[in-house]
Amino acid sequence: MVTDVSGKEIRSFDGFLTKGQLLGAWSLPEVIVPFNGYFVLVDDFVLANWAHPCRWVFVSPEGEVETIRMSIPPDVLPRMSVEYTSLPETDDGKGQYNNHTRYYGDVQFIYNVLAHDYLIPDDHIIVCFSDGLNPAPDLSSGLNSNPDFDNDGDSDIIYDATTTGVTSGYNAINAMVGADDHLFIYTTDHGNTGKGGFDNPPEVILNLWNGQTLNDDTFMGYVDSFSAMSIHAVMEQCFSGGFLEEVVNAGATQPRTFASAANASESSYAGATYPEYDEYVYYWIGAVHGSTPPTTSVPGGALPGNPDINGDGCISMYEAAFKAEEWDTCAQSGQEHPMWDDTPDDCGDDYFLGGLIVTSLESSSAFVPSMGLSISQNPVVSTATVNFTLPSPAHATIEILDIAGRIISTPVNGTVASGSHSVVSGLSSAPAGVYMVRLTTGQHTETLRAVRL
Image (cartoon, rainbow, N blue to C red):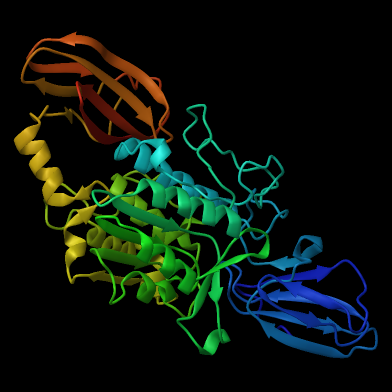
């Protein structure tokens, strides 16, 4: 009997089950219905990402009850009705329950940061997500995932998140990445224990689309086959810490870093950023971006603190992981225990999303003249001005972009004389939010982040 319903959700199946009938459960073995009757699901940690403790409860018309403790919901979940939930009211929907809209938010956020902050070409970003380009609804809101993350007119989702899709993604990356490249791997959504159940971590899996899985050993084979200069992994899913030993392993042939929202034997949580994002990666991405988008419960904008611990102007892999754990309320409460490791030791201080930090600093200071990009007020107000300096006359473009990478205004586009300049940002009619100021001249681009209240 369920007496305490705090943090729980209770669902009932809309049909009558017969003894011996099989109920599927993602990657776990099917469950045999013990007797004729009804079926109830008790989700004991409704704010956690799957896998996490839940109870499958079978009830006969005569009142007989049998409870099976599980870690995964049944395949019939879309047909089950919510009888009680401790979730706050949202427009998250009750359709495709397992593919929460926050996972789309996680992927969209990191994609835009890679493409528009760190200027990585979109054909160098391989995304495997849900059912790929299938137009059928695939989100928990009952909508289809928009494959165009930054609204630039092309699809940013490349493959679906099936075993076949992930294998295709791996092959595409392996053909692209060479000894001069830095590889960044990012995962979200659901995870579970793999071989042996809850009592045998760190054998874990990443749940893929349509009940398929990617286990830690297969993932290790992928990672070890890359010839990249360095490899960096950030993982949000439940039991994600179980992938640590596969990424940072004794046979690693290049520097590697690893950060995860949870350890090898626990669930991860949406946290304070529910329902739009998962909190750990929300702050990890926020740290490397310089700000965060607003959520239902978190205003977004300015970060809780300065992620640049050593003041070198770059947010290293270590700094992002350290700050994400510090700002993640579920980590601070002890609900989840983020993991971090690197090889060789302390190399996480040397890398950021742009590659080697020392290379970036040398490139900007020794080989490319500084353009002195700044903004007169922060937070931005309607009359905020953008200040910049050119060492010689050049064609320059200043663009104001929103968090999705859409151009809001272009206050400068033409030949500009050498010296210092000041132009109005063009945000007078823009809504409150996070914006980027991008100055481009020749082959060099500088980007400044700002907030308009």
